Length: 266
Image 1 (cartoon, rainbow, N blue to C red):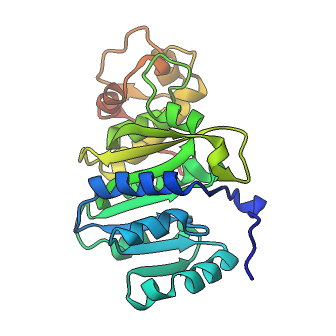
Image 2 (image 1 turned 135 degrees about the vertical axis):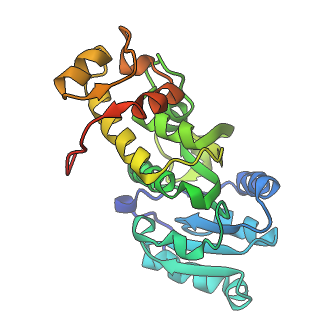
């Protein structure tokens, strides 16, 4: 006997609409390079897993909840025996995804991810961008809007910059809150993040993380005043402009001109 109730501490919201699961699996399958390895974050009771397996995909399912892992092992034992489903009882944030990447851009990551760690998960995927070709995620609609936001809008921020520098992002479909159990307070979106192969070195990523952290800490200040405050020099001509008014590409170009020593922590 296995629990039907979600674990609130893990922010579990199970997708219970089978037609939606079939739709999402088909969207993934249509864009998934057949040579790529599929890693699923938090499969839960396996509503999406089931449909992906039915389409012939091999899945590495990373699930932190031991009760859900037991449920998956019992429900999908035939796929496990056929080595089509490999279950990893582990926190995805600690999971060594690179172990399953043999070449660049050979991973497809999918998942109905917990709302409270969406940014932590996306940050990990950004850092490992050279290994990932596609990401398909179910996220809060508000979160999806932030990922696709244009500069000079309220939703635009650090998250937008990193996501758009690495990935081309599309909202594939909206999913009603009524498709989940328990019913969350907001609707969700199913998004695709396709690697645009604009590979960023770890050094540039680290510099970007630092300058965006200080710029958006003072998002209403002019950039030239922020640079002066933190004693950062640049060969770039800085106009009277704020962080929220600069596109991701302009941020990257600016970052390459900055001369500063990174603090140990920020």
